Structure formats: structure tokens, C-alpha cells
Image (cartoon, rainbow, N blue to C red; front, top):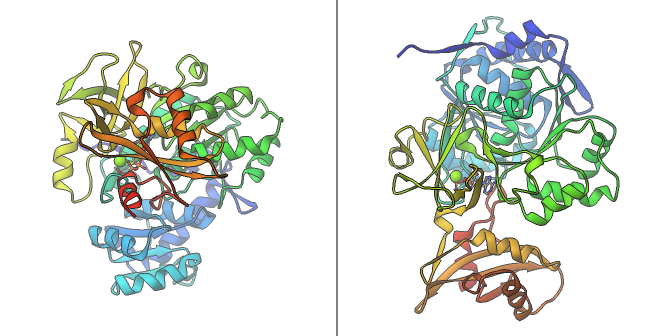
Length: 492
Ligand code: ATP
Ligand code: MG
């Protein structure tokens, strides 16, 4: 097969529009040519320690200017960046490091103590802080590539591990390119566009913004920490036209707004990461915030399905239609289902990963005839709008009926005193399984009241039979609910 290539995209961007702003971060800005200069400087220093000979290098970053420079430097050096989540424990991080078999990690000095702990788990790992890169000699030998190979692995990100042990998703240059193209064909692009990034750069949600910036010639406004006040201030002052958010961020932005509305220059809230609660979407309509709901995953190099705001009301609850270069189907036992039939969501497109690193079994199971089986259950309506129900592995079957924890959680979360909710199934002699819920509440309430509240909104077989009051719910490093752990909390 002939290989396909793309011009070295950072170099091409600097050639085309050198003086455009690439990045606003930490009260400064960098143009694309300034960014490139810094990237070449880091590449020169890193070649003085032969880093380019490594195939995989770990990175432990926060949302900083230096992280952006380092991520681009690794692309230039032809090294696959393995993006580590800094909220992982040393053991979890150690697992990913040995899973890849990497020798070196580049880290933000902010994580010095984390690195010290990691030394106990991976004593042979070479650890290089961003600060120390500055003191490496300038080798001046680095010659940037003219082209990137589309099929070369650019990055590896681990799935969050909600359904089992995290898997390393290999993302090629081509995957990132097609993801960025799919997004721009959907959202369009204006000269004023500026993408607000308060989601982590080590997740595909943040990394994909970095790729869009260089491919579209568009600035990113990078936030080290999500602060609703600061973001609202910036948006109200006319900075930022698009923002990627998860639902908890959107909640906080709305709560902080009072009754002020966003300026018309603000084009889009791209909402992803998980199911979007209906009350939140209704509130956004009230506040005139254009929300594009999305469905996607690490394996699809960000969103693959999107619902534009004009359908927010008529298709409430839908994740939308596939991006232009992508396709979706609903399958049951490898057979395509008809509209409204529930089954596994399968996806196809050039943005979809070619496979997990070193996971033969999972690759065999999840990739069939060019399609990727997502492990999520959903259905499509007669017009092809996708409705995501839940993860296959979390499905509860009660008396032969499918019960989706997400649907029950959404109802419970609609109660004003419920702050968090997690639902799982427990064995029942009569029904096979029955749903039970763990909730975190803000003020005392009786479980009977919550059950009665659920009964008003849910069919009888979906009503949680028991409510457990807990202080917090089990979550992973990405803050996602670990439903498979709920059982342990119930048994406690
Ligand atoms: P693991 O695969 O290890 O269990 P993960 O699936 O949580 O981890 P991610 O790739 O970060 O890791 O998350 C993608 C998943 O998030 C999707 O497969 C889906 O279950 C969920 N998700 C994303 N968008 C939506 C959406 N709009 N509605 C419902 N669920 C969504
Ligand atoms: Mg997954």
C-alpha cells in the first residue's frame, strides 16, 4: 500500500500565516512563528540527549504554554507522545509506563513530588523536567521533517478505565487530521474564531483543540484550571468564540452568569464527555447559549457525532448525526439494526484509531470489517439521529427488560437535593437483577421520598429499589463514575 503524507503541519502553518496568534496562555501570547521558534529550540536541546532515538516518550503536563511547546516538539521529533493523566496514582501511572515499555518521561516541575513517588514504582525511568530542558546544550543539529506520514502514531492516550483496565489508544497524524476536518466541516470557521481550552491537554478533548489550532490557523486561549468566573469574564469581553466543555463545567458557567447573556460573537459550546442532562440543555436554551452536543471517545480522536443547536429542542436527548467524514450504525450480533432498535453503536471513519497498543484480544473483539465497536448502546431514529443509552457493560436486565443506569441517574439528579447519583444492578431471585442507587445529597431526605420521586418519572421496573446515602461516589482519574465499583460501596 502506498503511504500518504501531509506537509509538516506546524512548519506549513508558519509558512502560511506566521504572525497569527497561536496561543494565549499565562497572560502572554505566542504567534505561530514564535511558537515554532521555541519548538525548534526544544528539539535542538532534546537531541543533545538523543531523545529522538526513543519511539515513545511519556508526558506529564498541565495546561501551560510549555506543555503546548513540548507536545509540538515531540511531533517534530517523530516521537509518539504518551499522554499521562496527572491525577493517576503512581501505581496506575507505572502500569501505563510499563505497558508501553517507555524509557523516558518529560514532566512539568509542578509534578516533582509525583515523580519522586513514581521512582519507587519505576526506578529505571529517565525523568526530565521541563525546566531542565532549558539547560541542555543547544545541539543545533535538528532538521525538521518536510512531511508527516498519515499512518504514523502521533500520540497514545489511555481510555479512562471505566469499563476495565485502561487501554492505550494509538492516534495517528491522519486520525488527528480527519478529526479536525470533520469538526470544521460541521462548525465552519471564521477569522475571529478563538477556541477556549479549559479541558486537559492530555485528554483528546484538549489535544484535539491544539491540533485544530495549527490546522486552522486559529488561536487557543488556554486555562490552567477551569474557573467559571474567569471564563465568563473573557467570553463577555468578546474573547473566545468556541469552547469545549463537559456538563459540570457548563453548569458552573450558567450558575455564575445570573441573567447576563453571552455576546453574539460566541458561536458554540461543544458539550461532550458523557450524557447531557436534559434540564441543563433546557437552561442553555433559556440563556441563549448555543450548545452543540457531541458523542465521541478517545478512540475516535474526539467527537464523531454532533447535534447542532437548531435541533436542541426537537431532538432533545439526541447526540446528533455523524460528522461529514464519519459513519455510524447500530448492531446486534454483527447485524445492522433498524431505526429505534437498540444495540451497540459502531463507528467508521479516518479519525477512528487503528487499534489499542499491545492489546490483541481487545483489537480482535472491537474491530470488525472496518468498523469499531464502541461498547456503548443506543439507537437511531427514523432520520438517523443517534440516541446514546449507556455502556453495554453497565446494562441492567430486570425481568427481561433493559434498564439503563444513566437514565435513572439523570432522573435522580433532577431532584434538587441530589448532588451525585450512581446506579447499578444487584441480584434478585425474582427479576434476575434490580436497580439500586447510591446518592450524595446536599440536605437530609428520606429514601422513600426519592423512590416516590423516581416513580413519578420512570416506569416501575426502572425505579431504584433501594437508595444508599454515601459521602462520595467512586470515580476514576478522569472523574468518571465507576459503576462497577458501586457494588463494593453497597456491600460496605
Ligand atoms: P474505558 O473505555 O476505559 O472504559 P472511557 O470510555 O470512559 O474509558 P473515554 O474515551 O474518555 O474513556 O470516554 C468515551 C465514552 O464516554 C464513550 O464511549 C461513552 O460511553 C461516553 N460518552 C461520550 N459522549 C457521550 C454522550 N454524548 N452521551 C453518552 N455517553 C457519552
Ligand atoms: Mg471507552
